Length: 286
Image (tube, rainbow, N blue to C red):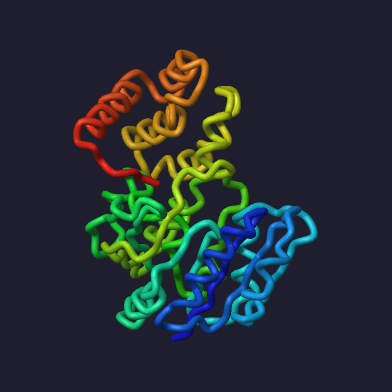
């Protein structure tokens, strides 16, 4: 089985350079590398030598299409048996492709993995599941973001990324693959480096959001309301609303919004869990 690598990038040439170095150091070489530039306005001139060295295809879009559409373009352009996705701000460790390749040889249709926090490598985030489970999915994305996700190309051609979602596209994809009955393996080891809390990342944008704009963050939860059930749906809604509350203003308005949309019980549960995590000094989550 050969692996196509699909990298999405937007205005982060320095990060992309780091990501490509990680790809170049893989113990198992990629079959092909496809870079989808979502109409960046910054110069990527310094990155082109590495692109040429890796014989990667660099496809710059004429207009911004968004990360999910960019990944779907990557799927259409790929020809490998497996597609491994990589965000431009993350870095694969040297055995990443070899490790996921072994899982596909064992019969997996899709794979996720654990990771280390880039810059704070002692912070490790893993899920102990051998396979993706409903119990874990109900709690949200307890596995990894897109840089730890790979799947057989024929599955992805049938089940593309939901371009209507503003966030939560990874969890949405995992839920749909699980519901389809795909052999969905999890590697409970940190095999890539995840860059946490970018200034231009989804988390940063959420902190600047107004309460009236929160509906755009609830798309994946609403889409899978039946899968979640009442308790887990309200829990997820409260978490989405109160995410990074310490950075938001006015806080009382956000709390009021959570009570209105998720209920008092789910809102109190959010704060109880926050206290528990602080006491336990639990590592970061994605």
